[in-house]
Length: 260
Image (cartoon, rainbow, N blue to C red; front, side, top):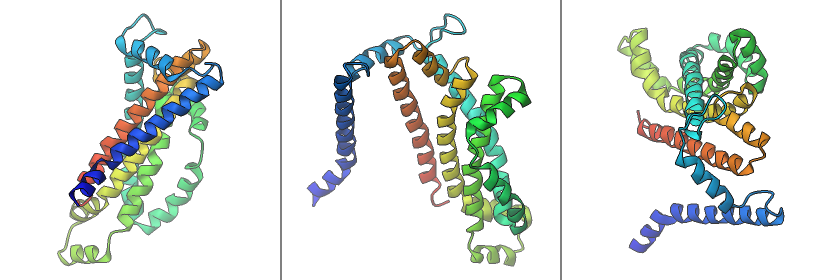
């Protein structure tokens, strides 16, 4: 029994190692089949180490280390994500607690939500007259929807018993929001935030390819123009790792407030 428990403890790790080996093996096979047109893991690892050796060098606006590129992208992501959250959470609370608000706003959400993030970029340029503002704008727009929808769902799911108790104790509107609505909806809100940060991190790469300047997306595009596939694959590894860390951070928050 004890051995079985130990096996179950290490099973996720074993699966993770196994899937990584399979991925590297497939990558190596593709590299061999394409006569190294697709760089092998070893070639990519060599370039990856060179990039990490001096991540914050700065030789001018178009020649910066991967650390500088990553920091610039994260600043844009958290700026757009933060602004989106400031809009999405209050609006979600309103929609979830009011049928009238739901009927008025839901059609607008359903029309705007499927629009491609990049379709908003020209409007961002028109509004802010700068690529930086336009990039943050598309992050803002696309990160609103998951948080908004999950917040509204969490509020709408509050059991009638909770509402009856609040009414029996004569809760004010503010007290009802802070003592009933937010605690019950918090796990749903965090789920929405987790989804939103993932969407924001995906969109930033495409946004920076359009906007140019400093950022991980522009780094990928610049590497393609230089035909440096090793740098592109290294950037993909970095993008994936950062995305995983962001997701794990919100996963921790989600578990922390699962029974709030």
